Length: 148
Length: 83
Image (cartoon, rainbow over all chains, first blue to last red; front, side, top):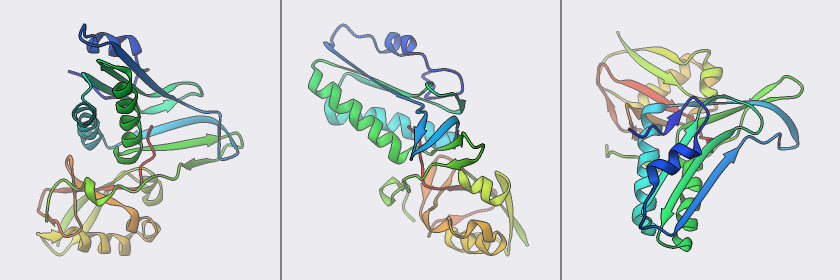
């Protein structure tokens, strides 16, 4: 089973192995890493928390929608949670497609949609010892999956 | 009186003091909006966040008009910042 939310370091090799396909001629990899600065402040550490039942579902939906919308062969996403150090990889997206244009477009769609729709929260620790949650994106009405 | 279980994610956990919370309600079923109103009264520190919070039950986001039944846990999801 492909686990999308992970508490251990992400493995690009594992994602490349599970997505391998002789029918594809393009491979796009996106990795988000922990920055040392944010909003003019020095960041020393970072922690992600998650609401896992919905996050796993949303990541799978984003993968399927990227494949459907851009016609790529496969899209796989992993997001790390828990404490991370500066430079650690927090999110990794692998897209394989017959050609490069759709591979780039699908990877961009996937990371943009992850940032806006997956229930994950980032709390930064700064050089002065204070901590703060990063201002986020409200989940929109079109994320509602049932009708009252 | 009955008890509704809530889970406070992200900055709401910090504002409310814990991830798991309980709210005394008059009974079930109860609408999400009514539960949020009562939760805000019992947890003043959460009030500023609630207008921007999405709600979920298990792995589904639910609207404010959704009906909660006994045994449901209402999950409060503040604005997200993954990636």
